[in-house]
Length: 446
Ligand code: SAH
Ligand code: SF4
Ligand code: F3S
Image (cartoon, rainbow, N blue to C red; front, side, top):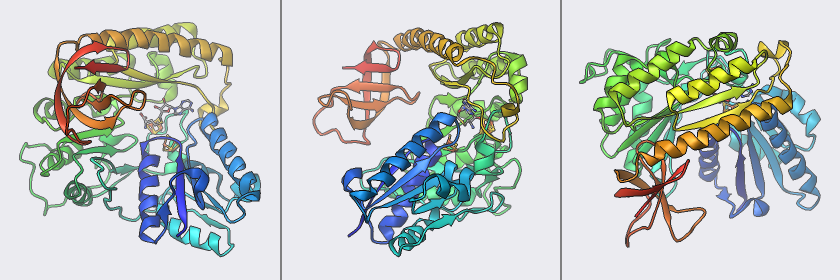
């Protein structure tokens, strides 16, 4: 039996699509390889969001293709955002690549692998305005947590961002289809779902996702996104619901009420801010100001004091001055982020900001990056220390990667907890733990 392995870069959406592609291959009679070295088929799922992400995938493909000398029958394929962006030209860069599959035709994987086995190179691209095939839920044995994509593409077009070019226009899956998928997942033992979408609170704002046949919202939610969350919370077996990524415009009174009232909705919001300077935010075309963002955070924290808020930041955006940067620093303090992902600006071909001079030096970007990381370490440690002595309900994941004698799990606020597992504890079980120690990114319990 031929075996396959995936090497996935990028965001959760790619992780989800690698899973879907893997299931298609399993259904077609291929088997998962015990490791990449032994695989007959290796598929790289790529990300285009920063230049470095593409360099990594290209480097990996180059290496895999050069090893074809030792593994002449090995098939090497590419999927994801870089395949979508580069299209035909990927075969000039990586001539021995067997196939490339764009972002809206993951289901073509089996065909592409079979064509490669017959010695044919395949390029599968679907125009980004076409709707993708319906997806369905599938899990591997023992899987208790799953991603569910509810919103494809993005219409925001922030000036630095390539995602709309590689993922296409926003398209919301019908609520019925999403609910059916989560039902299937829950029947297979999934307890936690993470809903995915680039600007996820836009769910259902452009195209109707509920029909007149759908029962009305018991909680009276009118906006499609809170209404969908409520419907998913009503599915038996689903204990936790997460979603990503948020935007301050979606922090509506309805969403805040749901965070406060629905215990299954995890107390965590990933709310990328990108910059603390209104001037930079407007050049990024983010659609909010510094004050608007902080106000959304304040409303959330007021109604749901235990909520954890995390963010993404870009340092060194074209024209970002020292004083803009200091505003980002102070906003991060004011928002009291629990965690932050900080990226150095990378000009992406075809985006608006790529036509502006990339005028913050690499050195300066690194300096700003490091300052924010150090700040966040102190802030993260401080925030986590407040939790010492508190009792937290933790979803047990399994033995910790760093210390196999301990287990790790997550709180509702998405914080990692390291603990000693009592006898009989299984992955996917809930356990109530008292926090005894805290580090910037980790909690420890007895
Ligand atoms: N849809 C999400 C972001 C998806 S991309 C949102 O808008 O919140 C993930 C993160 O990558 C972004 O939040 C941003 O911080 C970063 N990013 C996107 N384009 C980038 C670029 N050109 N250079 C550096 N970082 C970038
Ligand atoms: Fe990119 Fe902006 Fe869309 Fe996020 S909201 S994916 S940053 S264009
Ligand atoms: Fe990267 Fe594509 Fe996700 S560009 S961040 S993998 S949508």
